[in-house]
Image (tube, rainbow over all chains, first blue to last red; front, side, top):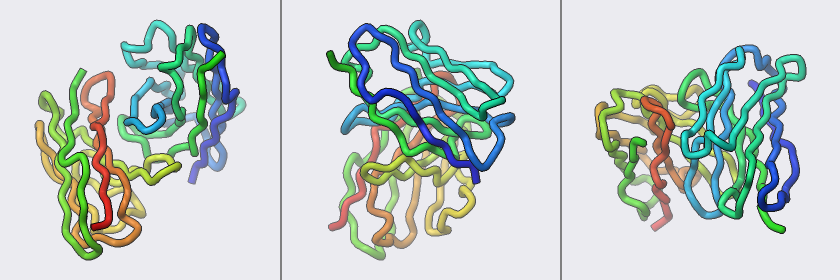
Length: 116
Length: 107
């Protein structure tokens, strides 16, 4: 069973770029769809986007101008970059794996706070 | 975007009860719907995909039904471990969207 682990800074300044990496262990990243999903404190879930192992991406239009998701199959990792962050981007960020639209494996999540 | 509306927002029930949570989509999503369970401080867990397919390892007391715009998640006999928040998610159209959640509380 693949296990996912998010890593990256827990604090980002406003207007800067949030960067997170998800490392997959116990399985290859060279298949499936690899997603980023976030959850503001006390609120619901928001789909950010996903990348297919081949590199094809789909993003949420509400974030598309600021988001980049990339994959590094040699490291079994995929990454999220979200630019020009504001306090509204404060959330727990999850990485997840799925065969299509649903996500069957999730990381534990990492809280990213946007604050000066 | 497709809006997903869950009802109720909060549900109080007892161990052994049969409970049903409803999820309505703002337009037809065929059967492209998933259900997740989330406990405080934890990641969501996939329970049901494609509206009615049980994810491997999920107890059979969980079941899903529906198609088009109306879907239900049923727990046939509540267990203590089932008290959590439940989310539906559509994956028919981009962007994928989630319902606002249903918190299942102990009565």
